[in-house]
Image (tube, rainbow, N blue to C red; front, side, top):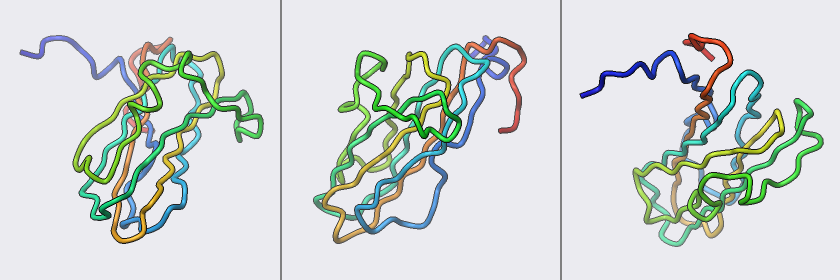
Length: 143
């Protein structure tokens, strides 16, 4: 039974918005997420039914202090809760969720999903950034 308030402790920001099926190997670059005012962030990815039969999807995370991430550097597994490999998936991972936490010290972060072998079908991916441990409560309802 749910009896604790989670609603006022988390803030959700669109990471990768749903779009029509993707049909190639173009990297899917998320929105840049500003972590100011929050002590934690979790990336949540959702896959739909992927109709390509040999595609794989590698996940990477970048961090930096510039709001446009012009200073972006790749995040290493030591700054993640979970691993990049655990965030990645294949064509067989239909209708699943993946999560990956960031514990680095940079203000801005983004996630990239890079398809490989997506040559004969459609892929569906979306995601949300979950910001937590806000310095002020309640957290905003809208992003």
